[in-house]
Length: 344
Image (cartoon, rainbow, N blue to C red):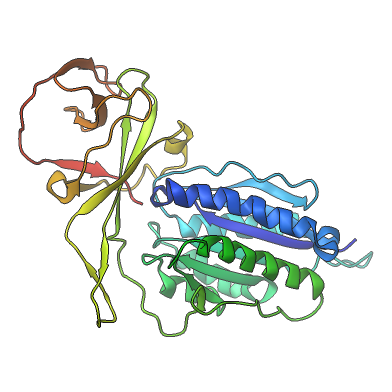
């Protein structure tokens, strides 16, 4: 049987934490449910999932649609596109069956690359390698999610670059349906050229001359630990976008508003790019202080002299869950300070 390999290469950087990551998890399940109802996809489509943040790993190798079970997506610091392309190339080389004298190999693989940011590694060598050795052998559909996606980088990989922005309630669900329809169209046209995906212009736009932002300036993420359980969490701040009436651009207001504080697993650190140089943000730019998602302490934003964040409940004597130093916090304001931020 000739398979249609379908690879989902998903950005799981910390800027995705919260609702976006949940939507991505739910979206994979929706795609699989849709494909299971289509006899063509059920017979030919085999799905793999590659996640990338500070590193890239295959978390699900190629599986047929019926036995595929959507994984829990990780989260980490960094957006290492170069590492993702390297892992994708390895999976194509080792998992896709090639045509031999004994029989036909798999159909031309389809790749869906979804990212919401700009690369934090040097992806130039891997992009060059992809264009020279894989671009003609693979149908790659790249989708930039939100305002910070680097569409210029994606256009170096493929002509099929789309830009998704969620303008109203339910747009993401319709976007997932768009991907499902695209996979189904590929499964029905195996052996032919890549079919055009049905799209709604306001929902997913094929990019031509859209200029991407050079830097991701819309999100700040900060890792901390619960002072009681020592379990990690991730604080997320987002810059509010304000569209001025009659003007065709967004005005970025200085500062970032609290978006939430989310419990994370220890594997966050394994998925993060620890070799990267640290960046900082001043607390004067951050508006709002969240509570600890693990123990309920009033503030998840106390800073130890080791440079790490922990939670406290007002004036308190605690042990730093990072360095085990005894700390005493008083009920006084010491002014603004710099704190290490994630790479997004």
